[in-house]
Amino acid sequence: MTDHRALSPAHLQAVEQIEAYGSHNYHPLPVVIESGSGAWLTDVDGNSYLDFLSAYSAVNFGHSNPALVKVAVEQLGKVSITSRAVYSATYGPFIEALAKLCGKDMVLPMNTGVEAVETSLKLARKWGYEVKGVPEDMANIIVMEGNFHGRTISVISFSDDEDATGSYGPFTPGFVKVPYGDLAAMEAAMDEHTVAILVEPIQGEAGVITPPADYLPGVRAIADRHNVLMIADEIQSGLGRTGTTFYCEQVGVIPDLYLLGKALGGGVVPVSAVVGNADILGLLKPGQHGSTFGGNPLAAAVGLAVVRLLETGEMQARSRELGAYLHGRLTGLLGHGVTEVRGIGLWAGVDIDPALGSARTICEAMLAKGVIAKDTHGSTIRMAPPLVITREELDLAVDALAECLAEARATTPELQLLH
Image 1 (cartoon, one colour):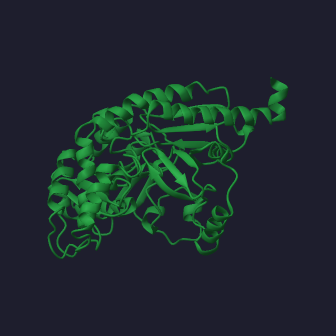
Image 2 (cartoon, helix red, strand yellow):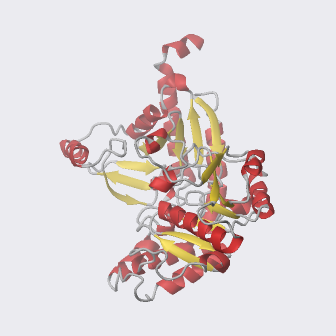
Image 3 (tube, helix red, strand yellow):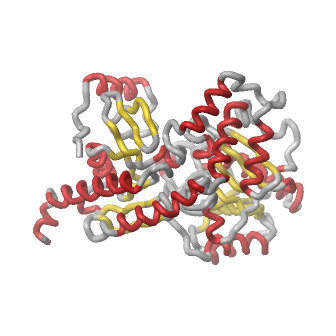
């Protein structure tokens, strides 16, 4: 494979410029991307990289997807922003199509995933006070340990991530944390003031943690018993990533609210949404919640095109079929520098043997071989390639990982002694 480590002066200058003038709220891999197509990205030096991250699942349908780019360009030539002060021609078709895709009555579009989460928290409290009858300011929402729902003040108020929470208090009250996957703890945490359960069907940032098959059905049953809302954050797991439109489908669960984002914008514009029935979303009245950009004509046009791609089922089928192949290849690396493989569809969390170094080190080595993947929690590599990827491209990425692991083993003295 081509070694991508030799960076040109222009490439290094771009990195230095970003580091000098940009807030250091991320730790990027040392590559400056200029363009992308399908499952591939190209840097400012003309080097090509296989994208095994998809912007954290925002690019499920590939970079510069022709159908999505065509819609976006056409809409830019008409009107892009109007605000919700008026109706727009693309808004109605988008929300109707998305509501039907989700099997729900209503859609409330926003921009980013965390805005959808914040919106759902407000809706849950409003429903609790106005429908369930919880006394004002007494509502609580059950959340999971190890969660990731974004980084606003309210959302980090129930995060376990010290990087996200340090020096940002005081935090928003009204949240009760229980262990992910523990139905007994969830049941015990319920009280008369509980209004909702917020759960990631699969915990992505935590390392692609997939719960037992009975977990989400158990969450649904607890929510029904206690008359609380089940809110499914499918911002990463939804829209084809796991082999179905929503992961909840695979275990026969229908939440009260779907939270969507990332891939809903097709990798073109930020689009998110809360999708539910009128008995919840219909509680909002003019002036009680909104967004200047939420549901704008450009976002709605692109969002509708994304829904159309999902309506055929082709993307979901690709994720199922190619995902099975990917997981088979990754499982073959167990005992060869990989200690565990988790996930479903074209989504995997791969734990690296700490004796070989950190997941970041392996990701940097993969980058030098032309594959972009990203570490999380020290020892885990997240893999989420675009759903348009081919089997041959999956082989390229897994072969690169295998080579990096073999090279790390060869330079680890204690492992050389064992073998």
